Image 1 (tube, rainbow, N blue to C red):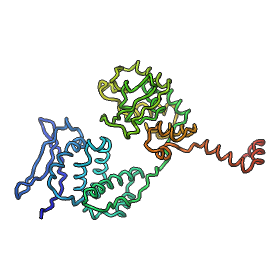
Image 2 (tube, helix red, strand yellow):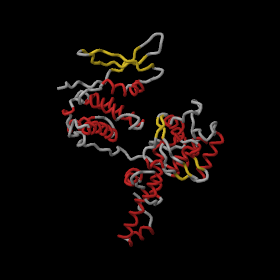
Image 3 (cartoon, rainbow, N blue to C red):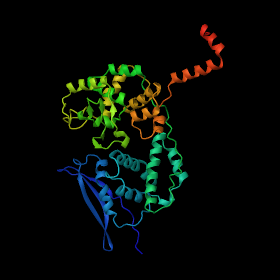
Image 4 (cartoon, rainbow, N blue to C red):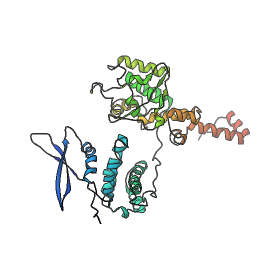
Length: 388
């Protein structure tokens, strides 16, 4: 019978140097006959991998190699190592998905559950742990999903037959309603923006494209004759890849006024060639797009303050939510709204982007009251309201 050996994650270490750049090394053990030998493999310098997370991504494949011919995983740490080797790869997952899973595993799952035997993890215990975390409900749901995916991976390899995380109860209900801008607020915001930022906000506000799609746009994506924008790629932290879903690759219509704003910005831009980004970084010589987070912090939110739009948390996704709300208020049928927002499911359109509009509620309520109490409503219109 072959003895089952433990999966290794190895130990990523930064070695300080006086005369050369500090260097990342992965330390691990290797079998040499009947002995286990300590090994240390160079990963690269801090110039190549400035941050630990950069070096961590570089050792994903190597970690898989040091676990060759090892039996089934015994602990959650072992399972994570196997999942990272076979599933968490650029060929299978988008860059953002890999980053997200690595972060959730490192910050939450491994510290609490890494040493647990796979069969020792209990549904109720995980549920209580998630409840104790001081995080938003949506964040807890993401942690649960990342944990559940690991057990689904184990079931696929027939190491387990039960996923204890699948029965964990969490709520993704937001702590507060997502903010949207009114037409008046949107108009006031535009007055406070530069030509570049105005073109950017008009484009994202009228089409609802995601910020990753916005940053990846180049000038050939703007079809002047067809009056539309082609969405073919996305950019997350300067990493380019496919769009979020297949439905996201649909072109979106472009209004003449929005096109005029884009062309006005193009005339002022230093980068006007077909292959140049719509919103390039001058600091990076136009080779990369601008950082959406930096734009939001230094340009958009200060403009919101100048426009005296207060009490709302505004991010890039706010413009997408705002568009969905405007479509609902204008009575746009759900199928058209789904196509404009490029959702794979109309239910997602309904659940996330059709905020109830207070004016619609009031109009509907007024009509019901007028139907029930026609005489009293008519008399109310003829008299002024009583003072409080």
